[in-house]
Length: 171
Ligand SMILES: [Zn+2]
Image (cartoon, rainbow, N blue to C red; front, side, top):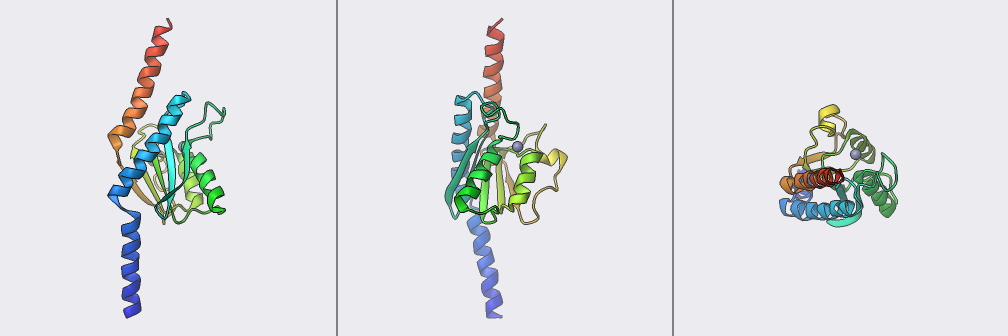
């Protein structure tokens, strides 16, 4: 009985460690910094980081234009980098922070990675996985949405606003 109790307490500690609102804000700010790197390259500003044991082990931002590659989403960059770092194809003890809701391609890749938790900033009404394949995530993956939601959605809104005004001024 004592052993069982200990296990319950340890599980609670794990959940506490994995869901910490202060950490979520700190790490989402890091993902936003990644998204800002994408703006500098004239890429749609989406940034992602992967955290393991409270440490950032991978960073990525959208590179679809620079690499002429539709699969070069921020999450894919971060997953590849984290797997290289850990020398493991599974990211079971890791948390992904991404500024925008993953698309279904990235949600599929995250399924294969067995990642323990996904935290995203703002919803992607048009291309987010929850509109198409809400059950695609791995059963063990926890999901949190809406961390620094306004900052994350402003990034994308401002990017397209600036792009439109530049396009208009060309004519
Ligand atoms: Zn994606």
